[in-house]
Length: 163
Image 1 (tube, helix red, strand yellow):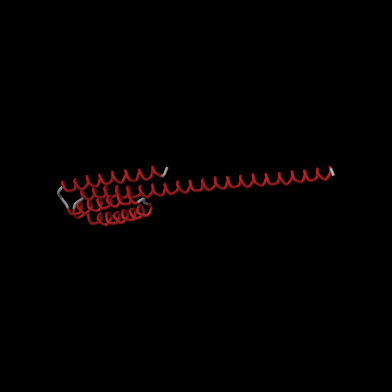
Image 2 (spheres, rainbow, N blue to C red):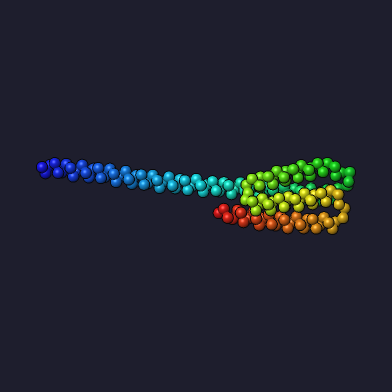
């Protein structure tokens, strides 16, 4: 009878050990799965932040190209401006493509700020093409710089909130 009880106790210990080992293995697997999911989500957030930053930067770079072309346009003789006008139109198209990407990447307040900035660039370009008086050009350029500052603030806030 003692042998039977010894066998029963031994078998119970083996079963209990198997259950405990299985339980701890299951728990460890769940913890590892949660850590992998957390890492995946963190990497996704970093990639999304980088995409947004690149979209914002592309918009600002296109705006700087517009400024440079406007300065060239103002310094050229009227006959030489025709070819530059084509380049300005292409750069404005690029600027609008950058705006579309910013709209897609968001957030909404940054996209709105970007749209205001692009409108200022467009208006300023229109003035440069037809205006000879420097005063309206300077006012338009100052308004565009203000819109650029607002865009930078909105973009910075959006990128900082993702950290």
